[in-house]
Image (cartoon, rainbow, N blue to C red; front, side):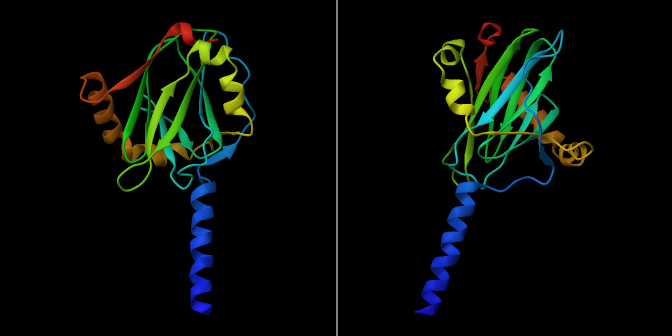
Amino acid sequence: MKKKIGLQIIAGLFFILQLTGCGSSIMTRVPTIEKPDAGMALVTVMRPSLFGGGIKFSLWDGENFQGILTAKSYIQFQATPGKHMLMARAENWSGVDAELQAGRHYYVIARPIMGAWKARVALDPVSRDQYNEGQVEKWMKGLTPTAVIDGKGENYAAPRLEQVRTAISNFNNGQAKSMPLSAADGI
C-alpha cells in the first residue's frame, strides 16, 4: 500500500512539473517593452498555454538566438525593418516569414501541440484583426516577460547554428512551411 501511494505521489509531481514547466537557467525576468525604439520594429512572442509546460521552445530570429520560451511567458526583441524568419524549435521547427516595419509592434503566439516523443511547436502570427478583437490582451494576461541573461546566449546558440541554418534553408526553399506575417499586421 505504501509503495502504491509513493508511486502516486511521484506521478502527481511529474504531472505538475509537466503543467507548470521548468524555468530556463539562461533566462531572467525583465520589464515589458512598451514600444519599439526609433527606426526599429518590436516583436513579442508569447506562450500563454500551460499544456506541454515541461517542454521549452528555443526562439530564433534567423541565426539570432532570442531565448527559451517556457509556459506562461513571452519574449520581446527589437528588430530592424524588413524580412525576418522567426523560428521556434521543439520536436520540430516552426516558422513565421515576417515583413516588419519600423515603429510597429508585432505579435506571434507559440502553441504547443502533440508530438511523437514530446511537444511540438506551432508559431502563429497574430493579425491586426485579432489584436483589435482583444485577443492579445487575453493571451498576455498573467504572462512573464523574459530575456536571455547577458553572456549566456552564446553558449546555447553556438552548437545549434548548423541546425538553425538548415531550418532556414528548409523554410526558404519550401521544404518546410512557414506562416506569413505582413507589415500591416503590426500595431
